Image 1 (cartoon, rainbow, N blue to C red):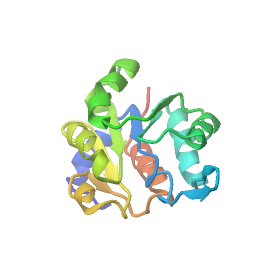
Image 2 (tube, rainbow, N blue to C red):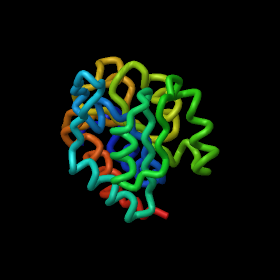
Image 3 (cartoon, rainbow, N blue to C red):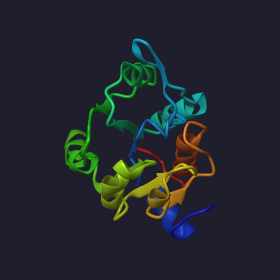
Amino acid sequence: MDSQIGKDELLRRARAIRLVISDVDGVLTDAGVYYSAAGEAMKRFNVRDGMGVELLREKGIATALLTRERSSIVSTRAEKLRIELCYMGIHDKRGHLPHIVEDTGFSLEQIAYIGDDVNDLGILDVVRGSGLTAAPKDAHPSVLERVHYICHAAGGHGAFRELADLILVSGNTGI
């Protein structure tokens, strides 16, 4: 288990999680976007990540999506996975975190965040103080330096599922 903090501390934090907030592009997708003449046409999602969302939900652990993009593709994916907390068009993710805390009632200690690029640094810095932070193995180096857990999987290739599995095997009993 590769971790920037000790294994015991990583598992302690994972046991407390009640909400996993995920960036979309570069975490749930491989960061590729297919464009047609009409604009954004497709994004590639990994079904194992979707199963991670479902397994978390079965334990009473919620998932939220937080992205700068406004995309009907992301809305469709969130609907398919029954993710009710889908925040799109958010350029200041750190600034939006208090709204998520208010919407959910969860404290920072109960929140995990997984992101992959420099626009995630602000929220990562806040969550890592008492919550749990993670990144896909192919995240930007500045992100990799600041997270508790670096996934073995790349974005869009099971990184979210890996974080979900970590939370689930930690002894987290959910709500």
